[in-house]
Image (tube, rainbow, N blue to C red):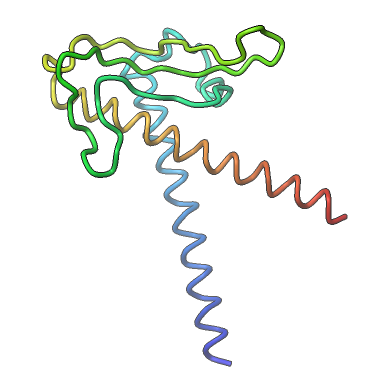
Length: 140
């Protein structure tokens, strides 16, 4: 009995932790949205999540070398839009251009990487909620 109760407590703590992390992430993401001037390209913070994906050029997002500058590249945050009515389905849109990678300030680089990772973190929650809702409609 205590084993089941312990598992329930552990699961509850994990879910609570994820929800707190998600709320903190959204606050930090909104701050970065403004400080990186992405609000110049995307008028509403909520509209960021209409993009299919957000990628980064000039800086690594791989776990092994996260934040490593790729020499002789330009740093840019790139949003990918999916348009099923268009002949070209995926379109890239620049959300921010920051110049040559080797000339980028370290603090700015960290903010750019943080923005992309935080966006992906929130987008994954939204995707999870979407599919959870779809499964629930099938089960009724």
